[in-house]
Amino acid sequence: EDKIWANSGDSHLMEPEDLWTSRLPKRLADRAPRSERGEKYEIVYIDGTQIDRQLNDFMDAMRPPGFKDLDIRLQDLDQEGVRNQLAFPSMGFWTCNIKDPELEVAVARAWNDWAMEEVMGRQDRIFAPAIVPLRDVKNAVAEAERAAEMGFRALYFPCGIDDDRAWGLDLWEPLWAAAEELKLPLCWHIGTGAANVVYRGPGGAVVNYMETTYPGMRVVTHLVAGGALDRHPGLKVLVAEGGAGWVPAIGDRMDEAYRQHGMFVRPRLSRLPSEIIRQQVYASFQHDISAVQVIEDTAYDNVLWGDDYPHLEGTYGHTQQTLHTIFDDVDTRIRDRVLRGAFDELFPVAAAA
Ligand SMILES: CC(C)(COP(=O)(O)O)[C@@H](O)C(=O)NCCC(=O)NCCSC(=O)[C@]1(C)CCC[C@@]2(C)[C@@H]3[C@@H]4C[C@@H]5C[C@]3(C[C@]5(C)O4)[C@H](O)C[C@@H]21
Ligand SMILES: [Mn+2]
Image (cartoon, rainbow, N blue to C red):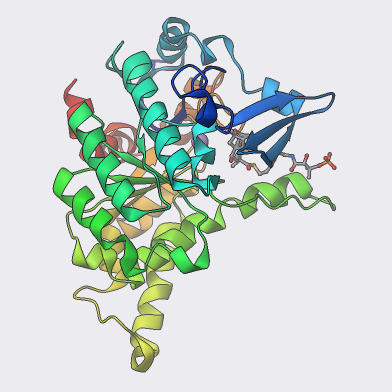
Protein backbone atom coordinates (compact mmCIF):
# COMPACT_ATOMS: atom_id res chain seq x y z
CA GLU A 1 0.00 0.00 0.00
CA ASP A 2 1.23 3.56 -0.64
CA LYS A 3 2.90 5.27 2.30
CA ILE A 4 0.76 7.80 4.14
CA TRP A 5 2.78 10.79 5.41
CA ALA A 6 1.53 12.56 8.53
CA ASN A 7 2.43 15.31 10.98
CA SER A 8 2.22 14.29 14.63
CA GLY A 9 0.66 16.70 17.15
CA ASP A 10 1.75 14.50 20.06
CA SER A 11 5.28 13.10 20.36
CA HIS A 12 7.90 13.22 23.11
CA LEU A 13 11.49 14.20 23.60
CA MET A 14 13.50 11.97 25.94
CA GLU A 15 15.89 14.11 27.94
CA PRO A 16 19.52 13.17 28.65
CA GLU A 17 20.27 12.23 32.27
CA ASP A 18 22.48 15.28 32.69
CA LEU A 19 20.14 17.90 31.22
CA TRP A 20 19.84 19.85 34.46
CA THR A 21 23.07 18.77 36.18
CA SER A 22 25.06 20.05 33.20
CA ARG A 23 23.21 23.36 32.96
CA LEU A 24 22.34 24.44 36.50
CA PRO A 25 24.49 25.39 39.47
CA LYS A 26 24.83 22.47 41.90
CA ARG A 27 22.57 24.06 44.54
CA LEU A 28 19.71 23.89 42.00
CA ALA A 29 20.78 20.86 39.93
CA ASP A 30 20.62 18.61 42.99
CA ARG A 31 16.94 19.48 43.35
CA ALA A 32 15.95 19.24 39.65
CA PRO A 33 13.89 16.28 38.30
CA ARG A 34 15.90 13.07 38.60
CA SER A 35 14.90 9.48 37.84
CA GLU A 36 16.39 6.52 39.69
CA ARG A 37 16.01 2.94 38.55
CA GLY A 38 15.41 0.50 41.36
CA GLU A 39 14.85 -3.27 41.44
CA LYS A 40 11.31 -3.12 40.07
CA TYR A 41 10.44 0.54 39.64
CA GLU A 42 11.88 3.67 38.09
CA ILE A 43 11.25 6.48 40.54
CA VAL A 44 11.28 10.20 39.76
CA TYR A 45 12.30 12.66 42.46
CA ILE A 46 11.99 16.43 42.46
CA ASP A 47 13.43 18.68 45.13
CA GLY A 48 13.81 15.69 47.44
CA THR A 49 10.29 14.25 47.05
CA GLN A 50 9.16 11.23 45.01
CA ILE A 51 6.70 12.34 42.36
CA ASP A 52 6.35 9.34 40.05
CA ARG A 53 6.92 5.61 40.02
CA GLN A 54 6.70 3.37 36.97
CA LEU A 55 7.49 -0.29 36.45
CA ASN A 56 10.98 -0.63 34.88
CA ASP A 57 9.78 -2.80 32.00
CA PHE A 58 6.99 -0.29 31.29
CA MET A 59 9.60 2.48 30.99
CA ASP A 60 12.01 0.26 29.02
CA ALA A 61 9.25 -0.48 26.50
CA MET A 62 9.13 3.26 25.65
CA ARG A 63 12.79 3.38 24.62
CA PRO A 64 13.14 2.50 20.91
CA PRO A 65 16.57 2.99 19.27
CA GLY A 66 15.91 6.62 18.34
CA PHE A 67 14.66 7.78 21.70
CA LYS A 68 17.92 9.51 22.57
CA ASP A 69 19.68 9.72 19.18
CA LEU A 70 18.26 12.42 16.93
CA ASP A 71 19.64 10.92 13.70
CA ILE A 72 18.17 7.50 14.45
CA ARG A 73 14.94 9.18 15.54
CA LEU A 74 14.68 10.94 12.16
CA GLN A 75 15.11 7.53 10.50
CA ASP A 76 12.31 6.22 12.75
CA LEU A 77 10.13 9.08 11.50
CA ASP A 78 10.87 8.25 7.85
CA GLN A 79 10.19 4.57 8.48
CA GLU A 80 6.87 5.32 10.19
CA GLY A 81 5.80 8.00 7.68
CA VAL A 82 5.92 10.96 10.06
CA ARG A 83 7.12 14.27 8.61
CA ASN A 84 6.91 16.71 11.51
CA GLN A 85 6.44 16.19 15.25
CA LEU A 86 5.34 18.50 18.03
CA ALA A 87 7.47 16.81 20.69
CA PHE A 88 6.42 17.27 24.32
CA PRO A 89 8.73 16.91 27.31
CA SER A 90 9.14 13.67 29.24
CA MET A 91 11.02 14.42 32.46
CA GLY A 92 10.20 18.05 31.78
CA PHE A 93 6.55 17.20 32.51
CA TRP A 94 7.41 17.31 36.19
CA THR A 95 8.53 20.97 36.24
CA CYS A 96 5.05 21.95 37.46
CA ASN A 97 5.56 19.85 40.62
CA ILE A 98 8.31 22.22 41.75
CA LYS A 99 7.03 24.51 44.52
CA ASP A 100 10.04 26.84 44.72
CA PRO A 101 9.61 29.52 42.02
CA GLU A 102 13.36 30.06 41.64
CA LEU A 103 14.02 26.35 41.04
CA GLU A 104 11.00 26.10 38.71
CA VAL A 105 12.23 29.02 36.58
CA ALA A 106 15.75 27.55 36.38
CA VAL A 107 14.49 24.05 35.46
CA ALA A 108 12.09 25.40 32.80
CA ARG A 109 14.69 27.70 31.25
CA ALA A 110 17.28 24.93 31.15
CA TRP A 111 14.83 22.56 29.48
CA ASN A 112 13.91 25.18 26.88
CA ASP A 113 17.57 25.97 26.18
CA TRP A 114 18.34 22.24 25.79
CA ALA A 115 15.35 21.66 23.47
CA MET A 116 16.34 24.62 21.29
CA GLU A 117 20.07 23.82 21.16
CA GLU A 118 20.04 20.02 21.04
CA VAL A 119 16.84 19.29 19.09
CA MET A 120 15.30 22.24 17.27
CA GLY A 121 18.66 23.78 16.40
CA ARG A 122 19.81 20.56 14.73
CA GLN A 123 16.90 19.79 12.37
CA ASP A 124 13.58 21.28 11.25
CA ARG A 125 11.06 18.44 11.52
CA ILE A 126 10.79 17.99 15.29
CA PHE A 127 9.96 20.98 17.48
CA ALA A 128 9.01 21.27 21.12
CA PRO A 129 6.57 23.45 23.02
CA ALA A 130 8.34 25.60 25.61
CA ILE A 131 7.86 24.89 29.32
CA VAL A 132 6.76 27.94 31.33
CA PRO A 133 7.14 28.25 35.12
CA LEU A 134 3.66 28.34 36.64
CA ARG A 135 4.15 29.24 40.30
CA ASP A 136 4.23 32.95 39.45
CA VAL A 137 2.43 34.15 36.31
CA LYS A 138 5.01 36.90 35.84
CA ASN A 139 7.68 34.22 35.42
CA ALA A 140 5.44 32.41 32.96
CA VAL A 141 4.99 35.55 30.85
CA ALA A 142 8.72 36.28 30.92
CA GLU A 143 9.63 32.74 29.79
CA ALA A 144 6.92 32.73 27.11
CA GLU A 145 8.39 35.95 25.72
CA ARG A 146 11.94 34.59 25.93
CA ALA A 147 10.86 31.34 24.26
CA ALA A 148 9.08 33.14 21.42
CA GLU A 149 12.22 35.20 20.91
CA MET A 150 14.27 31.97 20.72
CA GLY A 151 11.96 30.55 18.05
CA PHE A 152 9.53 28.37 20.03
CA ARG A 153 6.09 28.16 18.40
CA ALA A 154 4.02 26.65 21.20
CA LEU A 155 3.77 26.47 24.99
CA TYR A 156 3.34 23.29 27.08
CA PHE A 157 0.91 23.05 29.99
CA PRO A 158 0.14 20.24 32.46
CA CYS A 159 -3.56 19.38 32.81
CA GLY A 160 -3.62 18.98 36.58
CA ILE A 161 -3.47 22.21 38.60
CA ASP A 162 -4.42 23.17 42.16
CA ASP A 163 -8.01 24.39 42.62
CA ASP A 164 -6.81 27.83 43.70
CA ARG A 165 -4.91 28.12 40.41
CA ALA A 166 -7.59 26.64 38.14
CA TRP A 167 -7.00 27.47 34.47
CA GLY A 168 -10.16 29.61 34.26
CA LEU A 169 -9.11 32.04 37.02
CA ASP A 170 -8.20 35.62 36.09
CA LEU A 171 -4.75 35.19 37.61
CA TRP A 172 -3.66 33.68 34.26
CA GLU A 173 -4.89 36.66 32.23
CA PRO A 174 -1.38 38.16 31.64
CA LEU A 175 -0.19 34.82 30.25
CA TRP A 176 -3.18 34.36 27.92
CA ALA A 177 -2.73 37.93 26.67
CA ALA A 178 0.99 37.36 26.05
CA ALA A 179 0.43 34.01 24.31
CA GLU A 180 -2.24 35.53 22.06
CA GLU A 181 0.07 38.44 21.25
CA LEU A 182 2.98 36.08 20.53
CA LYS A 183 0.71 33.71 18.52
CA LEU A 184 1.77 30.75 20.67
CA PRO A 185 -0.74 27.89 20.82
CA LEU A 186 -1.32 26.53 24.35
CA CYS A 187 -0.66 22.77 24.36
CA TRP A 188 -1.93 20.73 27.28
CA HIS A 189 -0.78 17.12 27.49
CA ILE A 190 -2.83 14.57 29.44
CA GLY A 191 -1.42 12.52 32.33
CA THR A 192 0.41 15.49 33.83
CA GLY A 193 0.17 18.03 36.64
CA ALA A 194 -1.29 15.84 39.34
CA ALA A 195 -0.57 12.39 40.73
CA ASN A 196 -2.03 9.80 38.34
CA VAL A 197 -4.77 7.56 39.62
CA VAL A 198 -3.30 4.11 40.31
CA TYR A 199 -6.34 1.93 40.92
CA ARG A 200 -5.06 -1.57 41.54
CA GLY A 201 -8.35 -3.42 41.30
CA PRO A 202 -9.70 -5.31 38.29
CA GLY A 203 -9.15 -3.36 35.05
CA GLY A 204 -6.52 -1.15 36.72
CA ALA A 205 -4.43 -0.49 33.63
CA VAL A 206 -7.46 0.59 31.57
CA VAL A 207 -9.05 2.53 34.42
CA ASN A 208 -5.77 4.35 35.10
CA TYR A 209 -5.35 5.21 31.42
CA MET A 210 -8.89 6.58 31.21
CA GLU A 211 -8.32 8.60 34.40
CA THR A 212 -5.59 10.55 32.56
CA THR A 213 -8.10 11.57 29.88
CA TYR A 214 -10.70 13.40 32.01
CA PRO A 215 -8.42 16.27 33.15
CA GLY A 216 -8.06 17.34 29.49
CA MET A 217 -11.81 17.87 29.39
CA ARG A 218 -11.63 19.86 32.64
CA VAL A 219 -8.98 22.19 31.16
CA VAL A 220 -11.20 22.96 28.15
CA THR A 221 -14.25 23.49 30.36
CA HIS A 222 -12.47 26.07 32.54
CA LEU A 223 -10.89 27.91 29.60
CA VAL A 224 -14.21 28.10 27.73
CA ALA A 225 -16.71 28.68 30.56
CA GLY A 226 -14.31 30.93 32.48
CA GLY A 227 -14.13 33.26 29.48
CA ALA A 228 -10.37 33.11 28.75
CA LEU A 229 -10.84 31.91 25.17
CA ASP A 230 -13.79 34.27 24.62
CA ARG A 231 -11.64 37.21 25.74
CA HIS A 232 -8.72 36.07 23.57
CA PRO A 233 -10.22 34.82 20.28
CA GLY A 234 -6.72 34.57 18.81
CA LEU A 235 -5.70 31.90 21.33
CA LYS A 236 -5.65 28.28 20.19
CA VAL A 237 -5.63 25.35 22.60
CA LEU A 238 -4.49 21.79 21.90
CA VAL A 239 -5.26 18.92 24.26
CA ALA A 240 -2.77 16.21 23.28
CA GLU A 241 -3.27 12.45 23.70
CA GLY A 242 -6.77 12.68 25.10
CA GLY A 243 -8.62 11.59 21.95
CA ALA A 244 -10.98 13.93 20.09
CA GLY A 245 -14.48 12.43 20.01
CA TRP A 246 -15.34 14.10 23.33
CA VAL A 247 -14.71 17.67 22.16
CA PRO A 248 -18.02 18.45 20.40
CA ALA A 249 -19.84 16.42 23.04
CA ILE A 250 -18.67 18.63 25.90
CA GLY A 251 -19.51 21.63 23.70
CA ASP A 252 -23.13 20.50 23.63
CA ARG A 253 -23.23 19.90 27.33
CA MET A 254 -21.65 23.28 28.10
CA ASP A 255 -24.25 24.95 25.83
CA GLU A 256 -26.97 23.16 27.78
CA ALA A 257 -25.59 24.43 31.08
CA TYR A 258 -25.03 27.91 29.64
CA ARG A 259 -28.62 28.14 28.38
CA GLN A 260 -30.62 26.13 30.92
CA HIS A 261 -28.72 27.29 33.99
CA GLY A 262 -28.37 30.81 32.60
CA MET A 263 -29.43 32.42 35.88
CA PHE A 264 -26.16 31.28 37.46
CA VAL A 265 -23.86 31.84 34.46
CA ARG A 266 -20.95 34.25 34.80
CA PRO A 267 -19.16 35.55 32.92
CA ARG A 268 -21.59 35.85 30.05
CA LEU A 269 -19.81 34.89 26.82
CA SER A 270 -20.00 36.61 23.43
CA ARG A 271 -20.24 33.18 21.75
CA LEU A 272 -21.77 29.89 22.86
CA PRO A 273 -19.29 27.46 24.44
CA SER A 274 -19.69 25.11 21.45
CA GLU A 275 -18.76 27.95 19.08
CA ILE A 276 -15.68 28.85 21.09
CA ILE A 277 -14.65 25.20 21.07
CA ARG A 278 -15.11 24.87 17.33
CA GLN A 279 -13.03 27.97 16.69
CA GLN A 280 -10.24 27.59 19.24
CA VAL A 281 -9.92 24.08 20.69
CA TYR A 282 -7.93 21.28 19.03
CA ALA A 283 -7.37 17.69 20.18
CA SER A 284 -5.08 14.81 19.22
CA PHE A 285 -5.56 11.03 19.17
CA GLN A 286 -3.47 7.99 18.16
CA HIS A 287 -5.73 5.09 17.21
CA ASP A 288 -9.29 6.31 17.84
CA ILE A 289 -11.75 5.83 14.97
CA SER A 290 -14.25 8.06 16.80
CA ALA A 291 -11.82 10.98 16.26
CA VAL A 292 -12.54 10.77 12.51
CA GLN A 293 -16.21 9.82 12.81
CA VAL A 294 -16.81 12.95 14.89
CA ILE A 295 -15.61 15.09 11.94
CA GLU A 296 -17.91 13.29 9.54
CA ASP A 297 -20.85 13.64 11.92
CA THR A 298 -20.38 17.05 13.53
CA ALA A 299 -18.05 18.99 11.15
CA TYR A 300 -15.85 19.70 14.21
CA ASP A 301 -12.47 19.26 12.53
CA ASN A 302 -9.79 20.66 14.85
CA VAL A 303 -8.50 17.12 15.09
CA LEU A 304 -4.83 16.15 14.88
CA TRP A 305 -3.37 12.69 14.71
CA GLY A 306 -0.37 12.01 16.97
CA ASP A 307 2.16 9.14 17.03
CA ASP A 308 2.87 9.61 20.75
CA TYR A 309 6.41 8.50 19.96
CA PRO A 310 7.82 6.60 21.81
CA HIS A 311 5.05 5.73 24.23
CA LEU A 312 3.37 2.34 24.25
CA GLU A 313 -0.06 3.89 23.66
CA GLY A 314 1.43 5.42 20.50
CA THR A 315 1.86 3.99 17.01
CA TYR A 316 5.64 3.47 16.73
CA GLY A 317 6.18 0.22 14.84
CA HIS A 318 2.67 0.14 13.39
CA THR A 319 2.03 3.70 12.17
CA GLN A 320 1.34 2.87 8.51
CA GLN A 321 -0.98 0.03 9.48
CA THR A 322 -2.82 2.40 11.85
CA LEU A 323 -3.12 5.21 9.31
CA HIS A 324 -4.37 2.84 6.59
CA THR A 325 -6.86 1.24 8.97
CA ILE A 326 -8.25 4.62 10.02
CA PHE A 327 -8.11 6.55 6.75
CA ASP A 328 -8.33 4.18 3.76
CA ASP A 329 -12.09 4.58 3.45
CA VAL A 330 -12.22 8.19 4.66
CA ASP A 331 -12.73 11.28 2.50
CA THR A 332 -9.27 12.61 1.54
CA ARG A 333 -10.25 16.11 2.71
CA ILE A 334 -10.79 14.75 6.23
CA ARG A 335 -7.60 12.67 6.02
CA ASP A 336 -5.53 15.70 4.92
CA ARG A 337 -7.09 17.85 7.62
CA VAL A 338 -6.24 15.36 10.38
CA LEU A 339 -2.78 14.37 9.14
CA ARG A 340 -1.60 17.83 8.09
CA GLY A 341 -4.14 20.64 7.86
CA ALA A 342 -5.05 21.04 11.52
CA PHE A 343 -1.35 20.74 12.48
CA ASP A 344 -0.31 23.34 9.90
CA GLU A 345 -3.06 25.66 11.19
CA LEU A 346 -1.70 25.42 14.75
CA PHE A 347 1.97 25.56 13.76
CA PRO A 348 2.19 27.47 10.46
CA VAL A 349 5.90 28.19 10.66
CA ALA A 350 6.78 24.53 11.19
CA ALA A 351 4.67 23.59 8.22
CA ALA A 352 6.51 26.09 6.08
CA ALA A 353 9.90 24.61 7.13
C1 LIG B 1 -2.20 -1.78 36.18
C2 LIG B 1 -1.50 -1.35 37.43
C3 LIG B 1 -2.40 -0.54 38.35
C4 LIG B 1 -1.04 -2.62 38.17
O1 LIG B 1 -0.22 -2.15 39.18
P1 LIG B 1 0.68 -3.20 40.03
O2 LIG B 1 1.09 -4.28 39.06
O3 LIG B 1 -0.25 -3.74 41.12
O4 LIG B 1 1.85 -2.38 40.54
C5 LIG B 1 -0.31 -0.43 37.13
O5 LIG B 1 0.79 -1.23 36.81
C6 LIG B 1 -0.58 0.50 35.95
O6 LIG B 1 -1.54 1.23 35.92
N1 LIG B 1 0.35 0.41 34.96
C7 LIG B 1 0.25 1.21 33.73
C8 LIG B 1 1.26 2.45 33.80
C9 LIG B 1 0.57 3.68 34.36
O7 LIG B 1 1.15 4.42 35.11
N2 LIG B 1 -0.66 3.98 33.96
C10 LIG B 1 -1.23 5.25 34.33
C11 LIG B 1 -2.10 5.75 33.19
S1 LIG B 1 -1.15 5.91 31.68
C12 LIG B 1 -0.32 7.39 31.89
O8 LIG B 1 -0.27 7.87 32.99
C13 LIG B 1 0.26 8.10 30.67
C14 LIG B 1 -0.76 9.18 30.27
C15 LIG B 1 0.44 7.18 29.46
C16 LIG B 1 1.59 6.19 29.61
C17 LIG B 1 2.92 6.95 29.83
C18 LIG B 1 2.83 7.88 31.08
C19 LIG B 1 2.75 7.00 32.33
C20 LIG B 1 4.09 8.80 31.06
C21 LIG B 1 5.50 8.08 31.12
C22 LIG B 1 5.93 7.75 32.51
C23 LIG B 1 6.05 9.10 33.13
C24 LIG B 1 4.56 9.48 33.43
C25 LIG B 1 4.09 9.93 32.07
C26 LIG B 1 5.26 10.87 31.73
C27 LIG B 1 6.44 10.00 31.92
C28 LIG B 1 7.75 10.72 32.09
O9 LIG B 1 6.46 9.09 30.81
C29 LIG B 1 2.79 10.68 32.04
O10 LIG B 1 2.76 11.58 33.11
C30 LIG B 1 1.58 9.77 32.12
C31 LIG B 1 1.60 8.79 30.95
MN1 LIG C 1 1.95 11.79 24.51
